[in-house]
Image (cartoon, rainbow, N blue to C red; front, side, top):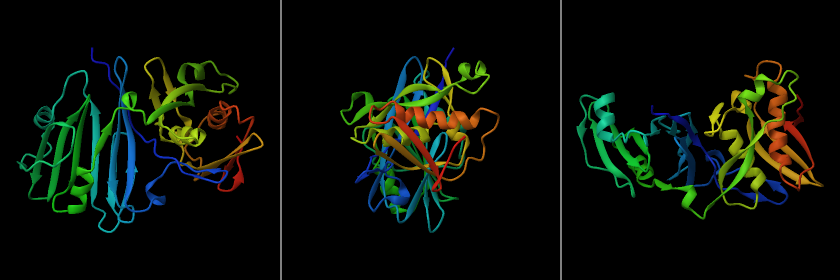
Length: 301
C-alpha cells in the first residue's frame, strides 16, 4: 500500500541578527526589493524527501502567504495570485500528463510555450485563453509541482522562472536543529499536563543564530506532523501567534510573540504551548531560563 505523509511548505529562511536581538528569518513584510523567499517542501515515504524551493520577487509589489499544500504570491494592487502547489509522488511517479488527465482542471486549455524553469523534468504549460490563466506543471525529484498564474504578467513570469530547488541533504548550505513537538501517544497518557514535548530534528539553513532559526521553523510546522517514527501535534499551529524575535542575555531567553492564542482548547493546550517554546530554547547551553512575551506583555499558561 502506498503510504503518503505530507508536511508541506515549512519555511526556513535566512536569519538576520541585530546586536543582541536575534530576529526571525526574512519574511515578505520585512524584506527589501528584490528579495528571495524560501520554503521547505517535504514528505515522508520510507524516509524523508525534501526540497528547499526559492524564488525572487519584489515585496513592495507582492505578499507571500503559505498554506498546507501551496504557496500564494499575491499582487498587492490587483490581488491577482500566483499559486505554487506541490505533492509528493515518489511512490507512483505521477507526471504532469497524469495529473492533467486525472484532474482535468481546464478542459478548454491549450498547450503553450514552456517557462524557463531550470533543473526540472516533464515541464508542461497550458493556457486558459478565456480566463487569462497559465498553468505550468513539472516534476522535481519526488515531487509534482503545479503553478497557476496570470498569463500576461511579466513580473509573474519572472517570479516563476526564478524558481530554484535545493536538496538539503546534499547541500552544504543546510544544517539541523531541534524543535519541541507534542507526541500524540504521550498526550493520551498525560493526565496532569506535565508532558514537556519531544525534540524533533529539523533542517535549517546554516546560521550562527540557531535559536531564532529553530523557533522560526517551529512556527512553520503544521498542526499535524509525522516524522516516520511517530505522529506529533504542534499546538502553536492552532493559534494566530507569530514569532517576532528572541533575545538572550545572562542565560535568559526572551521570546517575543505577536497575535493571539485563540484556537487553543482543552486543559493542556496552554501548558503544551509554553512547553514547546521553552524546551526548544532550553536545548541550547546558553539558555537556562525562558520568558515569553505576547504583544509586549509577559505570557504564561
